[in-house]
Image (cartoon, rainbow, N blue to C red; front, top):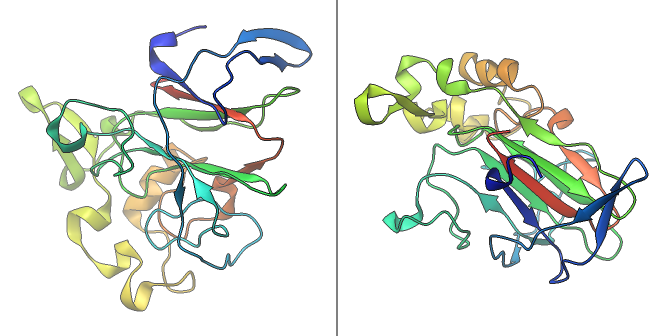
Length: 227
């Protein structure tokens, strides 16, 4: 498996013996998960569109379902760990979001830049019979990040790009207050920069539904960091 060190497989069960197929070709059994994910429950919310993913901020959410989220960002609580602990990443961070369906309902999944960006990531559902449409974010936004949103590391190198909401706290960017609905919260200059670089990713809370993907069949998920 190419770039194995940058890949994690999120599996719905403890079994790792099932072989996946791609276009009729047998693939090797998926490796054991490198991160232990525990389901969490979303607060109830009524979706305002037919297909949507987990909310990052006030974005409309899917119906309440158990959720496992792998959020890759700065080390959690300064422990040096990047494993999931249920607390989420410290912004700015690229988010790979999954809402697991129950009772025959589909999964919803997406890549979100609503909380900013720190690295590219790809999210691919895999079932016994097919590999589904991947949600992806390949562009290195750190190279395009406006100076007012930049987070610099050693030597002044840009290591992350903040969201305009985090940087300025303006309700217009955060989709809060008078801007807390899709009729008033629209794309801004900063979110449009993210969207043009990464069309398949959510760029602000009420972004269009083309950034949300669905699948059924109880898939496993292949998460690739820095694809």
